[in-house]
Length: 78
Image (cartoon, rainbow, N blue to C red; front, side, top):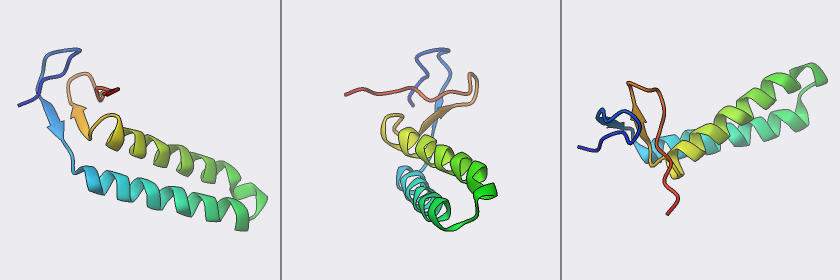
């Protein structure tokens, strides 16, 4: 069982492949929507793209681990 470096509570492991798949799919949809949809839809597309980038970073640098206590994921820079 892995523990959080901030608070010492146990970390929850999410499926890494699913996070990366959903993040990449959302990023692709955001890219297509940014190019093809009307101008008023751009803010929603930007939010979708930022959420996708968050999921990709969480799946890669965060190794899909999450702390329920402090609501963060520990970053791994190796």
